[in-house]
Length: 219
Image (cartoon, rainbow, N blue to C red):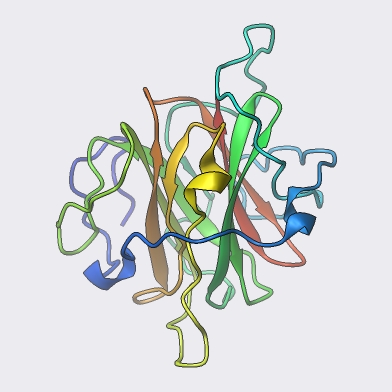
């Protein structure tokens, strides 16, 4: 099931209904914007990183910091769990997506309702093409990160669709769009992160309590 590191059309099992329409909205409360120590990278495993804050307040500019070196764990190649694409413990449904600015990078956080830790595959793609259907999705941005996670459940009527961060939460970051992972098809959830400018180094982390999949994009 594992796709190539660069793909124009992914052939995995995720259904076309997974990629959600672009919706404007605010992120979560101010508690998600507090700055604390960043977690160490997880590498390719699905074990959790040390607990850390999700996001920081965005500052007015997304310009890179020339004095900062790209740390270990960041790269432009595909990053995936060792066990991907095997289904792991259930992570529930997506409950939130948040974006915030950290020193040298911008963070996208996908939060889930369950206690299991997701397996994942994250990679740059030439176009935001839905797995299964092969349909191209309209995603704001110049470059596109495909984000896939398991084992995501199908939402019920009582589990509302989380809103994407509004433009105010993206100001000062390189993130042009970040749609939530709400539910899964046959256990797999999929979304895309739109980024301004060229493809950049990124890293993937897994955090617990609550369960979160984190994608950090270097500025």
